[in-house]
Length: 345
Image 1 (cartoon, rainbow, N blue to C red):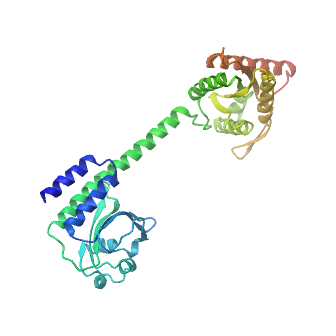
Image 2: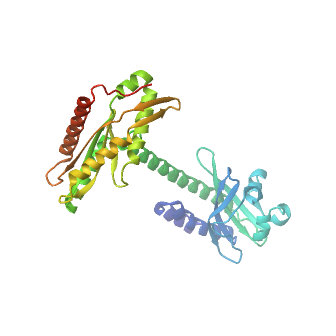
């Protein structure tokens, strides 16, 4: 028993995963119980399945890892419901279990593995094809092992929750909650990386600023819900007009920014910038059905796109140039069509 405690101590202190803890425990459990197979199961009550997660098979009888059987057919369910953790007469006591009959189980012992919240994670079991007595040490060792395994399960579940929470926090910090697009901070980081990439590749960098003309009128007339739907719809339209490698971000309010790798300096980068501006502007024009009931005839956004030299332009400077280009377009639109109004009928 002393050697078992020493081995258990080593396993608990060195194990970093459930598998690293469970496999030596199954080996120790085989020694304590004298049973042919020892195994750890998981139970999915919603799907009605019990599955063999890890197993140790010392003799002829084999409990295969990965085996799943209906929970209603298992010995574990019967043992829990009858509060009978040990049976050496499985064939007669629970002869209606197809799984036990197919595996040839005659002697069986198990204990549940429960989380702190009371949920049933699985069971720790031993089985044999022969009729064998249960050693006096088996029951307390099973309960101890089940408790240690439950603690490891709790740790791994907590780790999963923490990783998920961290991922959600990271996404929240980098994403605009309304449109799902990258936010301003994420955009600036992406633009810096893109400028460095384009400098290495000897290419220009395209930066576009988009301002949704007339957005305030939409908000004032129809309310913020329609205004939010308008911005989300525009985000979708703009995204659909871009290349897969381009990045669209919500810069703030009703302003969006597009960045992408441009052509080489000898391949008319200004022409590429004008083409991108035209494509973006056209994607914003047309009838919009918002909130499923409000139709807006939208005259289009003001779009300014520049092709910058990444060797001599910072991210902040590139954004200022694109912003200036957008305001030049906005002034031209107002000058050439002073009566232009976003239709809100």
